[in-house]
Amino acid sequence: MLALVLVGSVFLLVQARHLWFFGDDWMFLLERSLSQRPVHDLMAPHNDHWSAVPILIYRVLFSVVGLQHYLVFAVLPIIAHAVVCVLLFVVLRRCGVNDWIAVGVATVMVFLGAGAENLLWAFQVGMVGSAALGLAALLVATSLSGRRSVLLVWLLSVLSLMTASTSIPMLVWLGAFVLISDGVRRALVLTVPPMIVYAAWFAVWGHEADTGITKAPLADVLPMAWRGLSATWDNMSGFAGSGQVIVIGLLAASVALAPGTPRRTLALSGWAAALVAYLMFAYSRGSFGPDAATTSRYAYFGALLMLPSVALALDALLQRLRVRVVEAGLVLAVLLGLLVVPGIFGVIDFRVARDAMTPDLRQRVLAASELARSGEPRLREQVDPVWNASLSAAELTPDSVAEALPDEAVSPRARLTARATLQVGAAAESLGLPDAKPSFDSISTSPSGDCVIGLGTVDGVVKIPSGPTGAQVRITLAEPAGTTVVVRDGELSSAPVPLAAPDTDEFYLGITAPDVELRVSLPPGAPFTIC
Image (tube, rainbow, N blue to C red; front, top):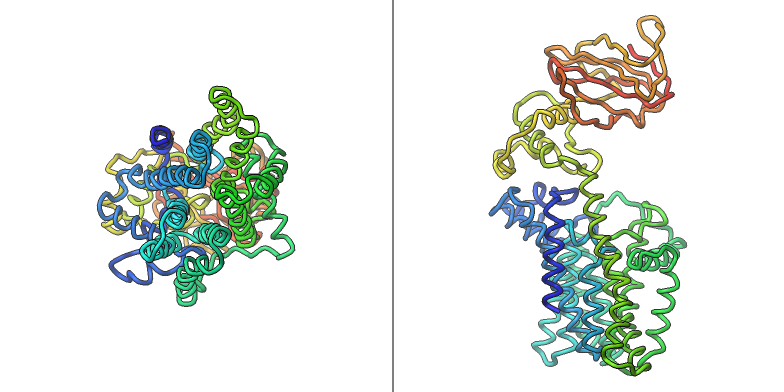
């Protein structure tokens, strides 16, 4: 089993080396501090998570290696995932699952393409870490007895709760397992003290969480949770529509097979935790629509919590058939291959898609830091408004951050892209810049007083020359969505950048970068007036 986990970890590292810091990574790297206000920054919720453990890890690594080596951070969820897979195997064996079935089921977890977001995004060490710590608490509860084991379960459970809110389903799994196997008293002894700690944190800090996400209506929660459960198996199997059948079959197997055995208890308690998990996911992410609970990060937990029922069903099948070891191995290899192979390709597909989301992100961040530190005027602060909205140019200005960035040359194109991102802006009021006289390529226009009117075209471009102190124009555009800007200097152009227009038909579009040309691509067919 360890060899398979090692192979899987190396495979994940190979994929992760193509990626870089993304999204919420920047909040832990640049917005939390252990020196200025350590208690607040460790205890304040991130969205609705208590993230003290990953924040502490991020801050320590940032102080040691800065942002020079992404793999130092990327290895965190991979290590946590390796621990999860080993612990899952040990728990399955402890509960009486056949050796080879336990190996096979844990291997599905190792190459879980359906949960690739948790495996290849360093920030997800929170979610995966909460699973590892929660699973460790479950293993201790099933293996040891006495006062020391209780204290260890408490410690592991509290650390899990301090890592991410996905620890709550893990605590439910622990409580349900102990409830079925040992009774109410021991279940309460093991789970109530960690719950009290979490409730205290929530009363003091956690209730202040402002995610900006609307909760789902209660009537929608159960259907959304069901979509999440079934989507997990759709993605794991690679067969759309198979998830509902698989979920129903596995739930029926968990209820009917091997009564009175620890492996059935593990499967049933896993289902209890899975139900709680997906109800949480659906309710807390309601504004993301009916598919809010189907994302990759949640599929990771769905797989972990439901795979014990797969082990239970396979174990019962092999015992019922009484086949020889070789035949059993072949059947197991075929069945698990149907899950492992799609998982491998799922990981690769996720890496390719994530890489395509943020092309040249490292160069763009370096260029943004360089521009921010130059003192040139900026009209916007977001370095990557779409995928890294929490990263601002001001946060890249301090010496401590600039010195932590990778030591590599910034390309001329990246510099222009930084200008298009930070020095081009739109506002309802004048930006106080000199008025420019635009020209047009592949757009037919007509004069209208001191302005021109026209329609956006597929290849049409509005050219706005920038002088030594920048330039601006006044635009009337009813549908600015889809407008992009490019900064051009001689023969070199920036990457296209979406225009963040104000919520008004008429606005001023300006650029503070000196002596360059701003090219604006308007939505095809959209009528405009430019003055």
